[in-house]
Image 1 (cartoon, rainbow, N blue to C red):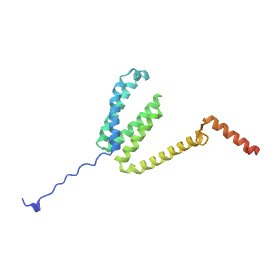
Image 2 (tube, one colour):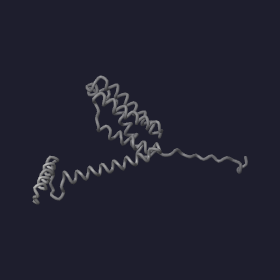
Image 3 (cartoon, one colour):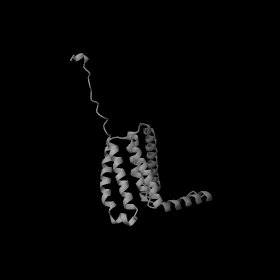
Image 4 (cartoon, one colour):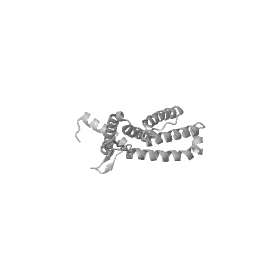
Length: 177
């Protein structure tokens, strides 16, 4: 064979999985494994007879989504988003909704969408920027309203309301104490 006419094949490895996706998947695998004993526990049966099979279905669905996300499949992200919305709706309908579940699930959805779906990156950046501003605002409100570093004392929210009323009365009467 003539070396000048040979076809050169080059191997291009698939893009690497980002560290954040790897951590999410590993935590998802651990969570699915820890869900198995929970499904058969007395606590699960205490919630209701519907809960153990439902929790098993959600754990299995989450495991499938994490496996798909491990291989960077776009369908896995959309399936996980659908699972989260279905889960929240069903738990709300059953009267077992917990707002704290939305924090890790929302974080997983935003990170996964940002890495897997290029169209969602801009939306994810805006959402992260909004969350940063909200957390910064809450931090400042806490530091200014609840804890006063200059006086080195802690104030309860009820005391802050009382102080606001005293200031309003002073403004109305013209006292400049």
